[in-house]
Amino acid sequence: MRMGSAVRVQDPHTARARPLGTHPPEVAIIQRSIAAAGLLKPPTYSHASIVEAGARLAFLAGSVPLDADGTLVGAGDPVRQTEQVLANLETQLRVIGSDLSQVVYTDVYVVSTDPAVLAQVWRVVEASGLSTAENGPHSSTLLGVACLGYPGQLVEITATAVVPE
Image (cartoon, rainbow, N blue to C red; front, side, top):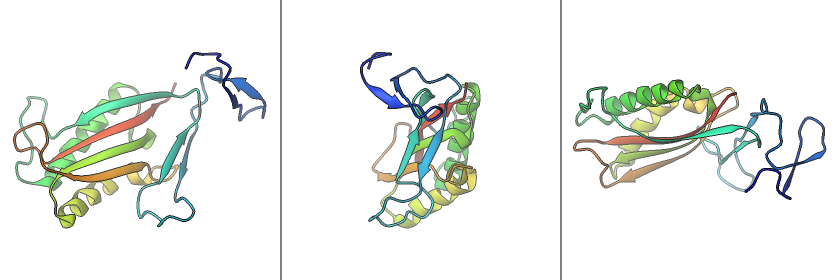
């Protein structure tokens, strides 16, 4: 969509319609819906996250369990790999001027078909602060997959985050 197009959005500050893309640059409101009516209440994630127009968003490539030298961390251990993935995600966010509290969406990929293994990984994600941000938990999908890109890799997390001005 072009800036200033005919599409209009409601300005939360003045209750007037404004052309899309013309919100003040400081507007970066994250609203998280804890549960949608008629759906099972999710335990530690949201069904939806809404970012007010005018915010800068970052779409982060998958964080992987490699250290700075490219060595796999936590071979055979999905919990240790998740810790490394989250540490790498925090680094990615810090470099762009954001942090875990600004993450609005993640996909968490785990090489396993065992729900117990997926639950172990999710507990690490919960403990990281992603699911306990000030505005409530972020939206997320947890997936069991057949394989990931690096030999021995068991976990990968992609994220979308607000980058505050």
